[in-house]
Length: 171
Image 1 (cartoon, one colour):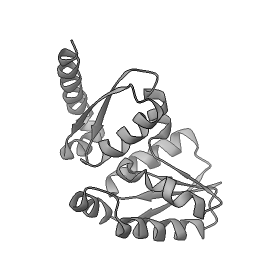
Image 2 (image 1 turned 90 degrees about the horizontal axis):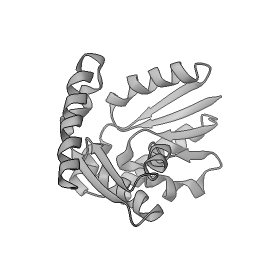
Image 3 (image 1 turned 180 degrees about the vertical axis):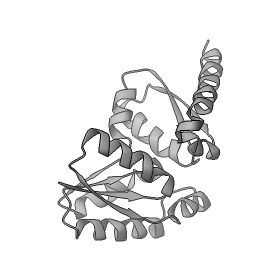
Image 4 (image 1 turned 45 degrees about the vertical axis):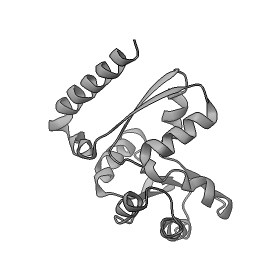
């Protein structure tokens, strides 16, 4: 089986490679990337025709590579799947769908993001499925660099601090 991964940042490559090697080592991964997408999204604050066209170009290349499915790896762009899916016979997967569906088991949901546009996309998905859920977001562009093993403890401490503050405000 071949899976295409569409990236907007190089930071996601290693964690995703490790996850696939651990869970499904026999799957062949094909990586497609446009690192200018995040800066375009940050400038516009929303999906634009230019962003959609650039993603469409990546999806076309992936599709032509005879893959079984196409996985987006950046939550900020996940709403593109609904726009582009009708054009392709292979499934386009959001990077966050399973996680968000799991989060919907709770009434209060906390989101941590490295891009300010990501919470908008995630909140849209969550609120469409459950308009009554309460969502709190933390956006910290520097937190993505804490994904490496040696910085994992610092990230955990930072997230715990944010979570405790949020829980305190809910009382």
